[in-house]
Structure formats: C-alpha cells, structure tokens
Amino acid sequence: MMRLRKITKVMRRRRAKKKSPLAFLNSVERMRGILDRERMRADRGNSMFTLVTFTLPSSHSAEDLAQLGTIAQQRVRTTDEVGLLGPNCIGAILPETSTTGAWKLADDVCIKLPTAALRAACEVAVYVHPSDRGTPNSEDRETVQQPANADSAETVLAGAGSVEADPRAAQAIQLMFVQGMPLWKRVIDVVVSATALLMLTPLFLVTAIAIKVASPGPVFFTQMRGGLGGRPFKIYKFRTMRVDAEACKAALLALSEQDGPAFKLKNDPRITRLGSFLRKTSIDELPQLINVLLGDMSLVGPRPLPCDESDRCLPWQQRRLDVTPGLTCIWQVEGRSRVTFDEWARMDVRYIQSRSLVKDAKLIAQTLPAVVLRKGAC
Image 1: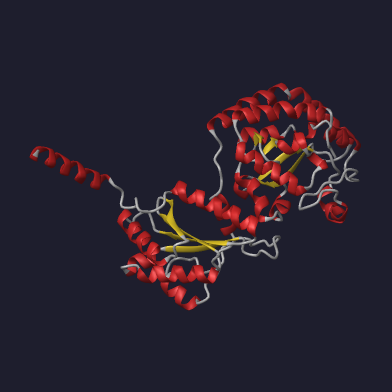
Image 2 (image 1 turned 30 degrees about the vertical axis):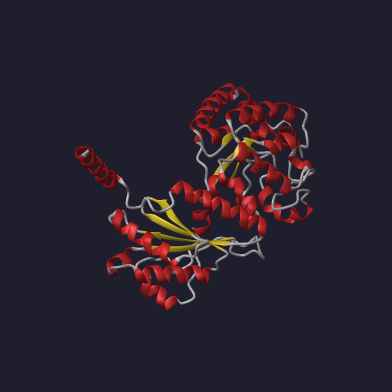
C-alpha cells in the first residue's frame, strides 16, 4: 500500500511538470472558434466586439506569458474570453466593448505587469469588428484605434509601437479567420491545373494570335484581386476589352446591372467583338489555371473580386475571403448574373461551411454544362 502511494505521488509530480503553465488559458483553436462566433453575432445583430492582443518577444518564457494571461483574466468581465492566439500572443475578446474600453483594459493589464522590462517588451494592439457600422465602405473597417488617454498609453505601452493607427490591422484580424487549404485540395489543384495547361497550349496559342489580330494591345489582362484573407494577388485573363478599359470604368459604374460592390454590365461597350465570344465561352478565364498552379487560387472557391470592390463588401460578406478564391463555385452553377450580390455572398459562405472533396467534384462537374449552356452569363 505504501509503495502504491509513492508511485502515485511520483506520477502526479511528473504530470505537474509536464503540464503547461498556459493550460489555464483558452487554446488557439478555441479562441479562433470564439472569434468566428462573435464575428457572426456582430454581422447578424448589428453589434460589435473588440479584440485586444498582448504579444511578447520569443525571448520571454512561458512563465512570463502565463503571468500576462493571469493578469488579463483578472481584469476582464465574465462575458469576455482570454486565451492564446499564437506562441507568444494572448488575446482578450470583449463583446459589446468600445475601443475606449478596450484600451482601458490594455492600460490596466500593462500597469499590473510585475516588471518594467516586461511592460516595455509587451506589444499591445486593439482591433474592433466592425469599427464603423454606419459606413460599411470605410477603408479602415477594422483598425488599431488610438487610446482615449494617449499620454498614459505611451507610458504604459513603451516600446509597443501600437499607439498609432496601423493600416495593416484590417488584414491582421481577417487573417485570424483564414482557413488553410486542405492537402487533398492543393494536390488536386496542382495536378489538374498543370495537366490542363499542357493540354490547352494549342488553344492558348490560337487565342493569343486571334487577340493580337483583332485589336491592338497585350494578349493578357492582369488585375489585382482580393485573395485569401484579403491579400491582393495578380490575376491573369485573356484580354477581352480595349486597352483603355480600366480608365473608362468610372464612367460606367452607374450602369452596373449587379447590385452591391461588384460591377457587371451585359452590353459593356469596352468589350471587343472577339472578347464577347471569349467571355461567352469562358475561354478568357483559362489563364487563371496559372493562378491555381501558383497557389493564389483553387479550382473551386469564391470568385475573387477586384480589390476596390472587395474592400467595399459589408463585414459579413468579407467572410468569402476566409478561403482561397477559385475558378468556380456555387454562384457559377446556380446564380451568376441572375442573383443579387447578397445571394452571391451567401452562396460563397454556404460553400465555405460545407466544402469537401465530394462537394468540389460535384461543382466542377456542374460547371461545364453551366458554361456550355451559358446559364445566367453576362
């Protein structure tokens, strides 16, 4: 019996040593789930939430991070959540809290840190979603806000560099919701896009010659689009418009037949005669197989919008940026120009919530007849 007790004590000690000092905090996965829940709540209920992040340099120990987490937990309300957002980052999610209240929490936590060195090393940032419910087109929808008491903040957050507004904050909070591409999906993208590019080389050559003969200008049209997490990337298409098409777009915006931020015009005067054929047959989209091979796009995923249109999306519509954009999705086979932009965005969100190998295969199989029959095409 005595021997059994000794063995039990030894095992308990070993477990205590193995137990992480950060085990009392919400895990990264748990925090991301809470963030997603609060984002949906804010988007649907016209409410808001604030995220405060505390980051320590990698040179600091887990015990220092645990101290920071303990203090943060002591300062928040019962409705708030504190947990890990990365190896050296702790976040506090504050529902229905203004940036002023969030910065007050940041001040309180930093003041309570036990040493001046730890206070100086701690970088603090505040993000709010959405920051301006009245003007969803605002360029700084989720930004780092300046605290109400800037003088005290500069003292408390010495060395943090987060007192000034950071234009990268919107992308930073968007990246917290990003869903990585599954391995099976990437393998299929590489194999199919590489094979298709080789097989379609003769068609590419014929199309390139036809474009050159039909109108002056380059064979390819490139444009910056909003990609995964809002990261811009250069998309490739066969040119179907006059070379001055982008310069003429502003004059045509009022004629757009698509509501919301997206611009679509059935009888666009900028489209060349050959370009009209290329669009109706979707041949103009084939160079995007290069984007798929490079990893900027996938075979299946929400269609990427031009950066200016993507930036004008409402907060809940920004959820389409959670996954890698694609050549085709539910909108291509069920909607296209026949649906409103809200319905388009809901189709994209529906795909994100249910994407799978079977779903992707089904959408690819449905895309070909949709293109051939030109369902809802502009």
